[in-house]
Image: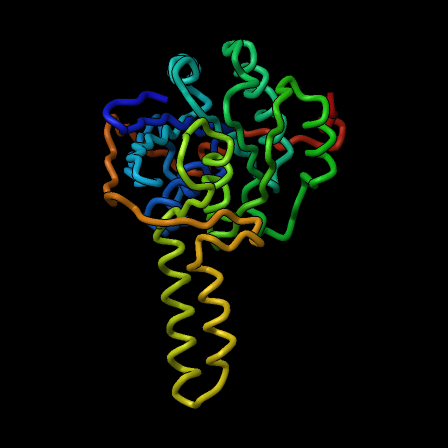
Length: 270
């Protein structure tokens, strides 16, 4: 992580097969948005500044395409955190993540010092083909020896999206005066506004007021030691910068011709 005048710039690389929801995860975190329309990404860079315990952290999130290995290897060389994403409804995407993690370990001799998160996206889809037991068995023997948190997420509903970046912060080398952090994401703002609306409605008829205040206090109190979720504070500047943005638009039906969905014999845990 680069440090200049109490400012840090961190590069996060998001890796995974196409159609697993990498871009959707990033956009959900950055702007609380989601689109059902698929547009293939060559490379996008999303930038955002945070103020964490008096330090400015500039985060660059690189959204990659598995079909461009040279670009991926270039980003791997300088990435300071890695997010590997597969889709829970696709065995093929899980096998591809295994290969991507193996490639990362081969190219980064310091792989066991890099914060890494494994993400199984699309938990909202009923047809799950990759279960947690399968993932845990692989992680136990994977090439990465450092503890790798595994999260099942939904970019559509927002489930566990914030937790991806909280976990990265916990694993990072950022030194702060407090163990409590708060990511001020539009997702959290939306949830807070929803809770406030519920409170206002309840207050109008005189019910549930005390329960809401207790819950709201737990959310806002950064010193709540009992919570496993490290909750947090203060976005320094909400600024989405998309530079080096390249898009290739293809019809989804055309893309599917090149995607092989494996049968049971393809799902081998090595």
